[in-house]
Structures are given as structure tokens and as C-alpha cells.
Image (cartoon, rainbow, N blue to C red):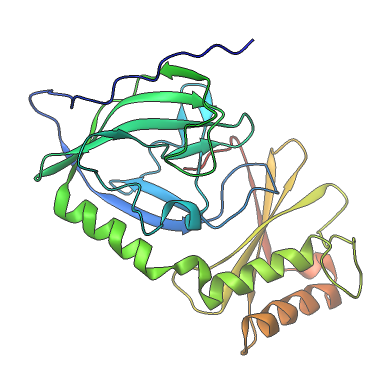
Length: 264
């Protein structure tokens, strides 16, 4: 039965004497979780270049869909008063990881991390939250200038609406049975595989990667393709038609073990 616990106090910053200053990088990516209906691309919040909040205790978190956290109200930036923000979500429960975000002009601090259950529809939505549990995550301190510039850059870029991500999402839709010429028919390397996610390569234009995984999430194959020139619709269709016409044994893929799932 649900109770109505009071949310933790948001009124005070942590006052630890010396804490290292971190850097924040916001990277659009696929969610590294075995849940193929999770909306993406997600905004991974890399701390000193590491996906540090991907796994906390026994729970694994994914980033918010980018369009829900990189918004014009800037939920990741400190407000006038400290406030709690759900920075990562656990889609299966659903729940979220919610530190208090505060700032004093020189640094931005994420402190007093809590798990919150029944996360809402955006990082500031606690309307349906019914349980708060503190978690053991050290305070994270960021240089205000670097942190603010990175949040503003990622928000202004609207990378999730770029042609490369549009092509990736269209390709994924084709692969997952969205081909109007063959509706409901997934295109996979074999019966044991499920369609995962498609994403553009971060460094090479017109390069794309498609992930497939097995039911037990122990194995993944990644297929790498070069898109033909054209609009996102033409690129996606060209890559799909190539796979359709090519024997799966000849697909350009590599295989590796998936020993865990993670993502924030």
C-alpha cells in the first residue's frame, strides 16, 4: 500500500570542506538497456568522461530522452533555491535517481541523492512519487562556467532533431517491422536476435550502427553501415534495402558479450 512520505528537505547545500571539481559532458546516445521500446536518443550525463551514474547499487539507470531534459526551462541548471531533479530514470520500475542541484556562483553541486519511485513525465515532475530512499552517492561538484556552458550547448543544439538522428530512427522503425512493404516483419541476423537501437556514428558522417541482442541480453551484435547520400528518409531506406538484399552471413557485424545493462 502506498504511503505519503515527505520528500527530503531541499533547503540546504552540503558543506563538505574539500570536494574535487568535476566536468560535465552531455552526449546523445542509445540507451544501453534491454528495453527496445524505450524512447531515444537519450542524454547521457558523463562525469569526467564516465557514465558514472549508470549503475547505483543494484539498480541501473538510463538517461532521459534528450527532448525531455534538454528543454528551455533548463532543469539541470541551478534555480534560485536548491531543488531536486531526476537526472536518470529506471524505465522498468519506473523510478529515478534524484539529487538536489544547487549553486553558489562558483560551483554547481549535486548532493543528497535519493531514489524516487514513480518518476513523472519530466525531470522536475514528482507529482506521482510515493517513495524516497537515500542512496550512497558522493556529492558531485562542477565548475559553474563549464557546467552551464555544456547544458546550454546541448540544449541549443537540439541534436535529437538532426538529420543523422532522424535517419537512425527511421532505419530502426523499418528494422522493427515498420516497412510498409512488409509490415510486422522484423529484420534480424537470426531468430535468436531482437532489434535493438540504431544510431549515427559520432565521428564519421553517414556511418550508422545497429544493435541486436538476444533475449537473455548476454550477447549483442552490432552491424555497421554507410548510408547513401540523400535526405534522412532516403538514407534510412537505402540502408534497410541493403540489409534486405544481403544474406545475413555477409552483414558487416561484430559480436561481443553483454555482461550487464547500463545507461544514464
